[in-house]
Amino acid sequence: MQIQSSFKMDTQRIAGVKYECLLFDMDDTLYPLSLGINLACRKNIQEYMLEHLHIEESKVPKMCLDLYLEHGTTMAGMKALGYEFDNDDFHAYVHGRLPYEKLKPDFVLRNLLLSMPQRKIIFTNADHTHAIEVLSRLGLEDCFEGIICFETLNPINSYQRILCKPSVEAFEAAIRIVNVDPKKTIFFDDSVRNVASGKVAGLHTVIVGRSDLVPGADHALNSIHNIREALPEIWEVEECNQQQMIRSLAVEATVHA
Ligand SMILES: [Mg+2]
Image (cartoon, rainbow, N blue to C red; front, side, top):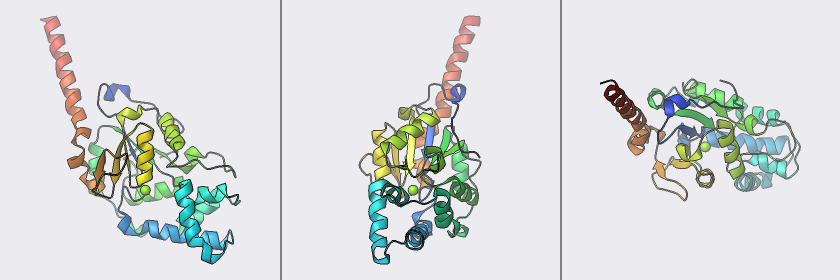
């Protein structure tokens, strides 16, 4: 699966349906936070701040969190502060030693995804290598049309400001790249602020990993596995298309009668 720079819409298949596209965050959305990948990642980021950027050890944990909260990712925050480092080196360091073995093939999710008639695209702040590793470990690499990731939104390895969720600009860029109507797109993410920004960008939104609604969320899913019960309308598309087909066949039959 390649990094997508542009997407073509399959207008034939999705004409007249309620939802055309499903945008999925990946980490802690397609697999549970409880696996500990997120925690291990944060630990690696803090180690990078200490070892490579020589930030004082006592300041690292708070700085890591504060920058994450203010800039979307700690990495984006460090760049904004003027720290100079190679994006690929950073990603290799923080993702290279993650306990990927905790991610097992998820056949239930795979079957759910394959049964959804909409276009399905990953929208993650992570880099492409990490995205491919996670998706292949989960056995989902062929379930998505493409991946919008760090490199998609930040094509040049620069020291400039990094574009990432939850910036509304990042959502607008993703919507433009995917070439879809946000009103006909459902966005899934475990991050409260990403969901809030997704709503501002005009998307239909689902918060994943909790059962209570948060500001800007249209639905809440404790687990992505509950998607069929919470959003049956995703599967109503086929029926809607079938009815459309029956209607047009009926019209044809009338004309020819
Ligand atoms: Mg996430």
